[in-house]
Length: 128
Image (cartoon, rainbow, N blue to C red):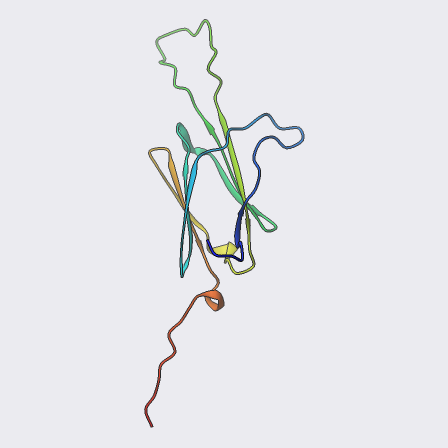
């Protein structure tokens, strides 16, 4: 990340009226075209994953499921289905409408591109 702090990691935890959430581990990579966020969300499926942008904040929420075989009866459970939540403050140089996401084997990959004006570009030189 550079000194301008375009992508700021927000504190996690619980918002008012919400149950406690786990902070998923993330790796963040930056290049000239934008930022890639890779989040570890074990047990989270596409159906239980919610990714949204609220104002300037990118929010990732997902609930993992604990599979119970259909042919058994659960009589005691101490393992609660974990809720994951993480948020990032996006700077104005990111294109919030062009964020893409993919989920594979519990690993979420988000591509957060910079707006075209914020990307470096090569200026052609003409010889006279």
